[in-house]
Image 1 (cartoon, helix red, strand yellow):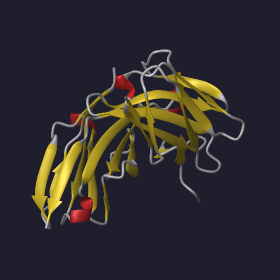
Image 2 (image 1 turned 135 degrees about the vertical axis):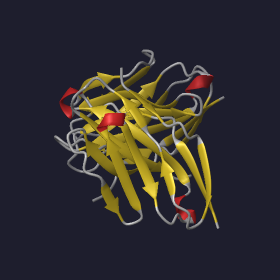
Image 3 (image 1 turned 90 degrees about the horizontal axis):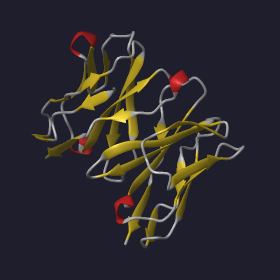
Length: 116
Length: 112
């Protein structure tokens, strides 16, 4: 069965601190996709990044970076120099290959609070 | 390109009533999925529609149903509402052979 675990329920940081959100996943599929979504108080889930199971190249995009390691089944997300606007709930999600349907399995989310 | 739209944004119903929620996908997207978000259960997959056919279904009772029209717009219906159906219902669309789902703003349903 597929499962996504976000062990950190809440994280509080002060502006300009770096913060890493952890995500551990379980799947028996050899082809799968991992996602990070951000949910601000308005409720809409905002897509941040997608990684394919066959692409372990890590990525940096502005203040965001992602660390995907198949050996440890982890897909962690780091915000550098956090800002108040980064305050939101962050969800890690997993899906199998799209041909079989694309039900996203979400973790429980990590609430990030950034204070000034 | 306009994003996913959902109507209504807020809804209050009483137990036993039924409700219909609507979702318009991003132009050109033919797949629409629905999710329920509650504080206790988190985000859970309801069902996915592609080209007017239900392609995948989550573990929800038969009171939850959906359909998709030829223009890819989708509706979901919940009959005989229960208090536990109070939730944020999110719709997502994706393009053909694309893995990423893009979400709408959601419909907040309160069942009294």
